[in-house]
Amino acid sequence: MDSDKRKVKQIAGLIVFTMLVYTVFTNYEKVFAGIAFLWDLIFPFVLGAAIAFLLNLPMRGIEKLLKKLMIWIHGKAAVRGNVKNGDAKKNRKNNSTTSAAERLLRPVSLLLTFGCVIAVISIVIGVVLPQLINTMESIGQAFMAWLPQFQAWLENTFADNPEIEKYIGDIRIDWVAVFDSVKNFIFNGATNILSHTFSATMGIISGVTTFFIAVVFACYILMQKEKLESQARRIIKVTFRAETVEKINYVASLTHRIFCSFITGQCLEACILGFMFFVCMLIFRLPYALLIAVLIAFTALIPIVGAFIGCIVGALLILLIDPFKALFFVIMFLVLQQIEGNLIYPHVVGGSVGLPSIWVLMAVTIGGSLMGIVGMLVFIPLVSVIYSLIGSWVRQREKC
Image 1 (cartoon, rainbow, N blue to C red):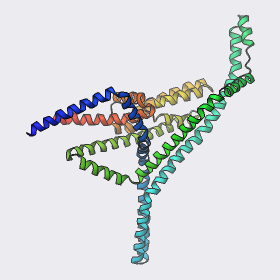
Image 2 (image 1 turned 90 degrees about the horizontal axis):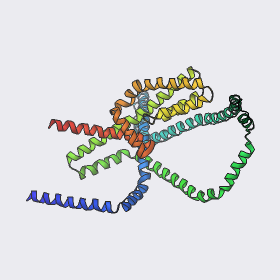
Image 3 (image 1 turned 60 degrees about the vertical axis):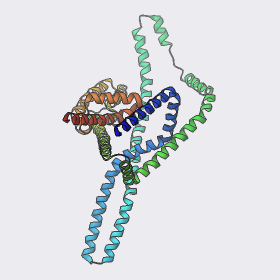
Image 4 (image 1 turned 180 degrees about the vertical axis):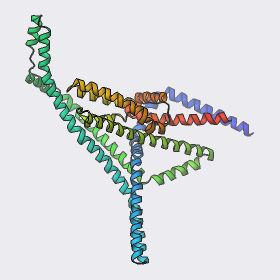
């Protein structure tokens, strides 16, 4: 009887699943529209959870440091109080002060974390933006100085052809006319700009609102993370069987460990690479040392291809000043990239992810195609989790 009931349930489940799949395929446009609508609703909270996960890494370190500092200060105060007298009231007062400090530990850690993030962003903008403006001005000046030289070279090259030489000699760029054309284009397009102003403004307001909700939600998660974790564990425990709960806890722990290790290692590796470039460019007196080092450090956060993007931009900037130095920079980049790829990356990032190179390339390609730069960053630890789970499953099946 029990076997018959199980078969009936299986058949009924199969029928329901088939009907569900048929309904989805016949109404796929409505289904996709519904999914998009739900995604718009939950996106601020997904973004907030991602922000909380990223901020939790530095906040956890700051919180541990503050806790050690608080214990050390409390220990010093207790020893000093015991040396003076053994008054019980003072001991109770010290204990109440310690408990109050412990309650403030999480908010202070969160504020310091936000302060550190804002300070890093401000420093990077303060360092990169002025140099970038100076670079653009230098490029403009170099182009204005190079244009007459190029025109003279053309005249010398085509000296045997009087018609071409006369045409080149008559070339003059009327910058006033160019600016007038640009001004007229702007004024003529003012109507279109005004028509899109409202939608652009609403988009900006919507983006700011989404980011604000995400930050508030991230703060709530970080302030109540132990309570939320306990609630999630209780829900899972009463919903699934003990064997399933154990598997869910294992997958969650593995995912958390791999993602934390990958993000920490990727940031550390980017900082090391940027510092190496900064020092080497200062030693060899290459221009834009700080700008290019910061640029390479930021682009190195993109796995595999990121540092090469920084190299191309840096080489183009140096090329406008000295082509020989640009060539030397490319050679230096290849040498440092080999050092970083063979010595630094395997120890800092590779060991934490535990993913073969071929799967890293596949994860970067698929993630970049689906979600851009964010996909490149997310898919490597995600594929690493899947790779580890498949490996664990295969080893269990081999033992059976």
